[in-house]
Length: 398
Image (tube, rainbow, N blue to C red):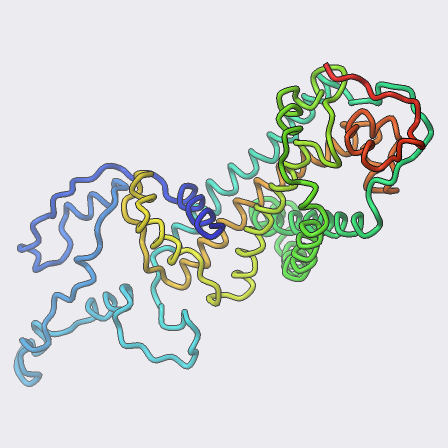
């Protein structure tokens, strides 16, 4: 299911709408089966052109004249036939490298990948992160900091054990490093080279690549840890509906009752788990090139289920060059990372400057009882025996 969702979303992201084209096949009899002026003009206008005809050889070696005669190669296989075979993967190639991609010498998708990576991916990714920061700043100016409404009791409740805090900071710290080094890789040529020069960027790029590749394993470990420790507390229940209806009390005085994690925190949790898992799978496939192929098989399933046609994409390609699998994986890896970075920016905001007392939960592990009663009153009832409960009452929700 995750693989299908991954490939479907990347298809929606990567496949741009093409200019409408004439579906009638041009008459190529005058060109001996070669492309016509109509084909060239359509390609220049950005229309999709079926290249299937170009993969068919136009020369026939059997009809070639003898080599001793004039124009001995007339009708035989020529250089265009060789390059056609190389481009469409039909040439009989022998290489010293026996890797999966060794025999693919020409691959058309490389330029489309590069243009998308340098254009829409970088542009809209930057807009998303900058826009998120601006919106959080505006929210702070309008709403201000969410403070503890009632009188503090001075009594602390243990909210997260040491192992829980370790898992959280392992995941958070590794993600921050991965995000930073990923941004360096994506924007380095446009931003850092003009600012610091090629040599400085080369040193930084090599270091970033090493950090990114190796810290990724810490991220995966942290992801597994928080899933195991907190999944039971993040299953949806009826209290989440009430919390969402009242907006978590963010825009009103008082906070709806919640268990250890409220509905907002649960959405953060599942976003991290689902998107983080997808990032991890695509990242591992990039760490081990051509070993984990995700998209071709998933495209085949989407075609079989009719989902691609329902979305207006027609039949998705079910045969991808090894390079194309890596290109799709890289674009998906970066695109989903941008989405998760925006979510984490909001999480960092609410856990620091946005809410009084929230940071204590992941630093010391202990929180003020009044804070806990206002934000997680049902959890307080679970962890505090009746005979030890403070007389302090939670702020009633409106």
